[in-house]
Structures are given as C-alpha cells and as structure tokens.
Image (cartoon, rainbow, N blue to C red; front, side):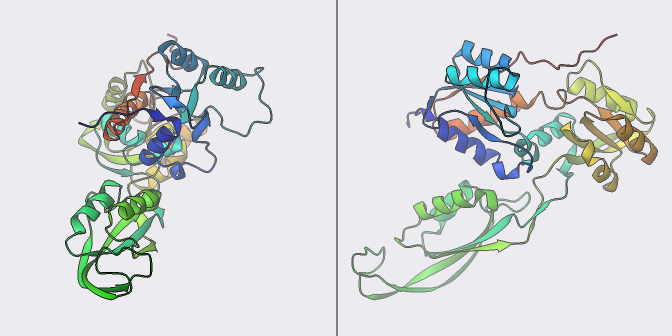
Length: 377
C-alpha cells in the first residue's frame, strides 16, 4: 500500500492547472496563484467562491494554509499594497498568517467538467455542448516510435496524462508496423543491441491526438514510459476545432415545459429564494443555454443556436429588452445563484485528484458564504 505524502503549494498549483488549465482563461482574467510561497507545505485547503475577509477568517479557524477561490483576489495589477482598502487588508492578513490564495475563474468556467457543465447538469440538460464557438488550433498530433511489444505500457501512460481523446471517445490511436534502424555512440546503453553497431528492430509507429494544454504532461509521461534512451517522436500542430471547452453550455430538456414551470425548476434546483424572468410565461422551453455568473454577452450566440431560453446572472435592462424583442426567454438566477455550487463540485474533484496522486491534503468546503443581494418583500 502506497502511503500518502504531504504536498507543497507548487504541487497543488500544478494539480489545479492540470484539471482547469490557466490558458483556458479569458485574456482579461487573473487566475492561478494570487499570493503564497510555492515551497510551503499544505495539509488543509479551504474551497470558496470569493477570497474575501470571511474566507481568510475561516481558513484561520480551521487551520487551512491554502484558500482556493473561484473569483480572483487580485483582478488588476496593483499600484500599491497597503491595508487601507479591502484587497490590501485581505492580502496583508493572508501573508501574515501564511495563507496562500489560488484562484480558478474563467478557466473553470470554460473547461470540460467545469462550472458550466455542473450548471447544465443541475438543470437536467441533455446532450450539452459549449455555447461559445470552439477554439481552433488547440491540438497536436503525437507520433512516437516504440519497439514491438512495448506499445501497451507507453499508450497507458499517454492516455493517463490526457492524450487520445476525440469527442466522447478515449484511448484513440493509430498503429503501423515497420523497421527502425539506429547506431548508438560511445557511452550509450542501447535498449536493443550494442554501442557502435548498426541495429534494426521491429517497431510500431503510434499516432494519437493531444490537447495543447496537456502536451507537456503527455510528453513527460511518454518519455518516462519509453524503453529507449533517446526517443524518436514528432509533435505536429493541428487546426482541429476543440468542442469540449468554451463559455456556457447549450442542451435540451427531456420534455418541453412552459417558461413559468422551467423558472420554478431553476429556482428549486439552484436553491434560490427568487429569480427574474423575461418572456411569455406560457411559451414552451426545450432548448436551453446556460452560463454561470455574468453570461449576457452570450445572448447573440444563444439566439444564433436556436435556444428558447438563456439562464445566467447579472442581466441588464437593455439586454432584457433586446431578448424580449428577439424572442429569447431569459432567467436571471443571479451571479451567486449560478455559481454557488462550485464549492461542492470543485471539492469533489480535488479530493479525487489528490487521492490519485497519494497527496495527504484535507479539503474543507466554505459554507458560510451568502449572496450580497437579499430579497425584500
């Protein structure tokens, strides 16, 4: 039995990036490590929506050395760092108490098995896909040559690191057989043959696809699993579109319902006291677009793809007017309401990833956060 080991902050930054790569974030966003010593030992993590003073209080109370938040503590470059404003006060307290802050924001929103997938699942949407147009050039073809008989172990390593996924299929590869030839120089220890002699051996050419954000990890695992000292491999950029990441999601309800009934379902499934609705309460809703947080920028895309309704938060007056005029129903479930479940869902995935890596780190979920808006009757 493998004993779990302690984790450094750098390990956890890498783990979060492997699940929700930083390069998926919007250009204006500031994700990743906000404050902290990468060499610090971490045995408790507090997961929260907002890295506010309340979260630092809770981290101190439970003894967590790391706060992982959705909304970044630092959005824009700081011109000064003083305890005279809220961000400064939080940063000072975090540093004084050796509490690191790490954030996953729009990278978590856009990622596969990220916040918008969780929102779509909670609203019982089926056959979902990203609402935002997919990225292009996000893949590489990996070609590697391996001696016959060693293919399985090498492929297992590549697939475990994130290679070989095509849509809903995994472990995808192509294999051809041929003859490889080489000669090792002085000081080499060839896996086959001896130094100075020309060798020929039966080899397999393996080809698979790798997302750009998984490339370094896949190559490292491949090199570690390969029996040769010097590995012959090619990395070929592809123009394939990536369809599993992007802002928002769009899918279908199992059965059409009225907008009024669907609004009730949204309120119940997201555990809300209230929400706002735009559109005829009796119109039928089948195709639904969703975006956690502020997703009104996707209104045009929801219309283009034929959505009956867009569920998001932070909808403004003129956006509501436009949607009503163009026949798109809106449900404003609030910024907090469409993201609050992130704490539970991210915690589940972090626990699983930590267990797979045998890292002895406890995950604590922040439960005291509240929507800053309250319903007044």
